[in-house]
Amino acid sequence: QKEVEQDPGPLSVPEGAIVSLNCTYSNSAFQYFMWYRQYSRKGPELLMYTYSSGNKEDGRFTAQVDKSSKYISLFIRDSQPSDSATYLCAMNSDSSASKIIFGSGTRLSIRP
Amino acid sequence: KAGVTQTPRYLIKTRGQQVTLSCSPISGHRSVSWYQQTPGQGLQFLFEYFSETQRNKGNFPGRFSGRQFSNSRSEMNVSTLELGDSALYLCASSLDRLNYNEQFFGPGTRLTVL
Image (cartoon, rainbow over the protein chains, first blue to last red):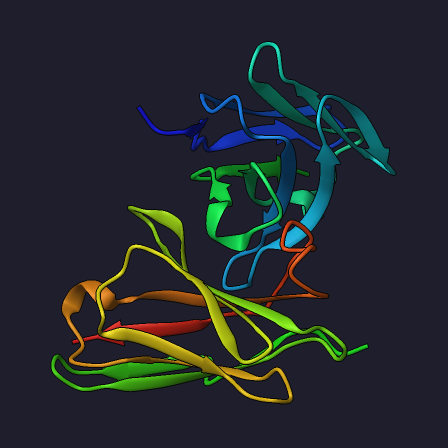
C-alpha cells in the first residue's frame, strides 16, 4: 500500500462546477499538507499549504485536512477552463524535503 | 522576482553518456532540492542542498550526484545513462531548511535517453 493514495482520474466537469479532489494517507506522522497544480510541460506550482487539521481558503480554493480520517481535500469553486491541469497532493512529517511524499496526481479537465 | 530557472529545458542523450543539469533558485533562496518525475513513479526526491552541502539524498544509485555553489545555484549530474533515466527532472527552491514545504518548482528539464 502506498503512503499516499490519489485517484489519477481523469476527472471532467463543466465550467462553473465545484470540483473536489482528494487524497488519503496511511502515515499518522504527516502534519504538513500541500496541494500543487501542474500544467502540461510545466513544473508543479504550490497552491495551498496547511499545517495539521482544519480548513484553509484562498480565493476559489479551499483545502481541508481531516487527520482523524487521514483524508485531505481540495475544493475548487466556480471552476474555469484554466483550472484544467494535474493536481498533486503532498505531505510531510517535518520540514525536510527528503520526507515529502507526493500523490500520483489527478488529471482535471474543465469543459467550457 | 524571477522564478526558478532550469537549463536546458530539453535533452536527448544515448545510453552510457553523462549529463549535467543546472538550476538557479529564486533570488534569496538558499535551499535547493531535486526531484525526478516519471509517469510510473510520480515525483521522487533526489537530493536536498543547503549552504553548498548535501543534506539528504533519496533512494537513487550513485550515478546520480549533485552540488550547490556559493551563490545557491545547483547542478545535478547523471553518469552512465540508462533508458530508465528518461524523466522530467525538477528543481525546487525554498528560503531555507525550515521551508521545504513551501517550495517553488522550476519548469524542469525533460531528459530522453535513447
